[in-house]
Amino acid sequence: MRDFLCQIRDAQRAAAQVFGVRTVADVVTADEPITLAEARLHLRVDAYGSPPESDDDEWITAQIPAAREYCERELGRALAPRTLEVGTNAFPAVAVDRTAGKAFTLPFGPVTSVTSVIYTDSDGVDQTLDSAGYALDPYATPSRVVLTYGSTWPAARASLNSVRIRYVTGYVDAVESPLRPILPRQARAAILLMLGHLYENREATGTDKLLELPLGVMSLLELVPGRERLGMR
Image (cartoon, rainbow, N blue to C red; front, side):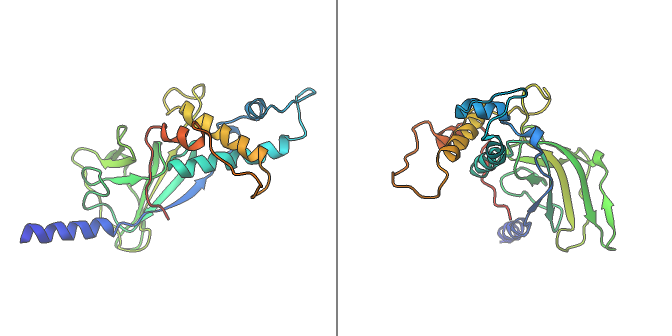
């Protein structure tokens, strides 16, 4: 009976850890996975002059992030680099989700680095946790922060967002850094297909029934490894 009650208690404590995610630094234009030149080539838009320009450049530039964000929401992954922060009301006391051990799950990976772990102590003072006490698990999907050998999580005040983990996440192009995850080709193709759909369909409704191609956006995204469907608020 005691073991059964302990399991219930642990499950309740795990469920009580509600994660909220906020954007600290969003994707900048230079880090978009699709360049204006690549978009023009895919859309068959001719550009003239030096530097080359087209009448559609302003529209294309505005819609590249929209196409990327659509694919990101379907994947639950960050297809371009940005800085996010997770807030929760406690350090993990039991396994959260399906991760093994007392770990923080970091949504919207792939996470490349943890900037800081800040918590509010029992006196209401914000403290920065020593980075030697935790590490980013390089193998887990979704990404997670785990304790290093011999370390323990401190006690945080049981209040809203008393623990905040700030981290850098997102894919990059191969030429940018060999140490960060490279954007999968299927994801790049899916963004371009979505951009093409937006370019050809400027209205919300139409007279023709729209049918997705067998190798359309959703089919390509299904091939991207590490799909995440985490609940985020």
